[in-house]
Image (tube, rainbow, N blue to C red; front, side):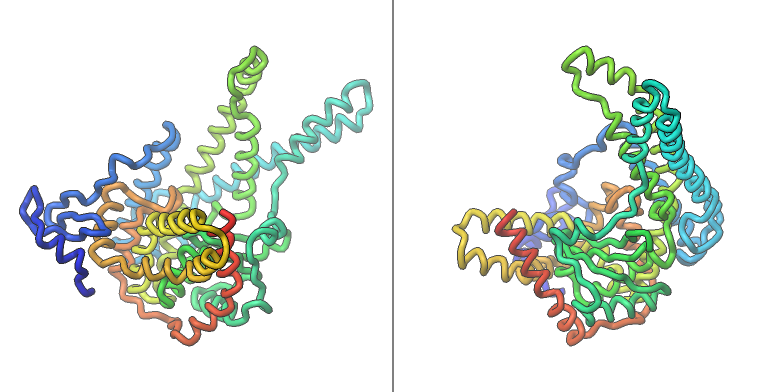
Amino acid sequence: MTETVDERRAADTGCPDCGTALTGGGAYVAWCAGCGWNTDPGASEEAPPAGRIDRVRRRLAHRYGEQLFADLIASGGPGEPGPSDESGEKASRAGRGRSGWLATCLALAVHGLTLALLGGGIAMIAAGQGLVPVLGALPLLVALVLRPRLGSLRKTAAHLPVLRRADAPELFGLLDDVAAAVGTTGVEAVVVDADVNASVRTYGIRRQRVLTVGLGLWETLSPQERVVLLGHEFGHYAHGDTRHALVVSTAFQSLDTWSYTLAPQPSESLLDDLTNLATALPRMAVDGVAGLLDHLTLRGAQRAEYLADEAAARTGGSRAAAALMDRLLSADAVAGMLRREAVATRTRRTGARSEDAAEGLWQRLAAQAGAVPASEYERLRRVAELRGHSVDSTHPPTHLRHRLLAAGAFAPRIVLDAERAARVDAELGDARRTLARELLLRG
């Protein structure tokens, strides 16, 4: 990559620790690639984990990520588990070992409690004696609140663009091609939002598939990196993940509802104190079950990410897959760019200038992201290793994912040329304009 003016200025300044010419500078952090001076100037600003449970969860997630990385290196890839795979997983699908089955049994027990409340409430109402039917309404109401929710797109479609096959045939054609290369089938709908992210899920009784594409990430990627992103998301469908299975995912929803309902109230009266005392034991029980279910599915979730990374590399190529990891490291910076654009637009008067700002938002975002030098990505990789960065605790450490992908040599099965990429972009045009206006003009 061509050296920028800011990098040349940094090169004229020596590291105060070892004297090596500094890297970066100007719009980017000036740091020493030799001894690491000033690699992570914002380390003191990093938010600590919120509470003991979160600290333990992060520590376990990091340990699992490192163990899985070592296993994968030893076995030659994510497809086969290594010898130290203590969860008992012996298949390429994530989370199908002992821990996966235990998680499913625990989730069934959670749903069993909901069914017991439902059955008990109905029985009390049917008894029809005195206050019993009135009291029976309480467990019935609780059961209805805790019922598994299969989801829908109605609420999503009310405030976000949702594309179907008839709306974007070129986009869905690309999705079908990527899905086939990964070994699965496509999706029924695509939700477009402004986040620096992408995800897949299922909804409804028929478990229809939906892909969510965040333009904050999509617009910063090259065409081939977009193929990799899609390959990763479809990799979750192809390889499975216990955490996202219907029984387990809805159990997590029920436990979240329990936690919200039993959360301690601010101590403002004696009644509040008595209520908090009465709910203390149930609250501890719910937290314990939720923690156990999370622990049982955490290793499988991380393995699913490694498997999805491999699917992405096989589909779009190892080089583009490693580049996508760099983009994920700069996600916070991209989100910051969007926030600055929004603030700058709202300080101007509304009208033609604001409309123009919205029209060119995604192009400006792509230009800024494309101007990030290779040295800054190298610094971000080092910061990620120092901090143990991951997208969240269900993802392995990002620097390990990058290292595994960079060591691969997969040639792309699907190449997204400029002409086809332009046709896909054209189909996203209305969504791009709508979201830009929402982000900049309405907040």
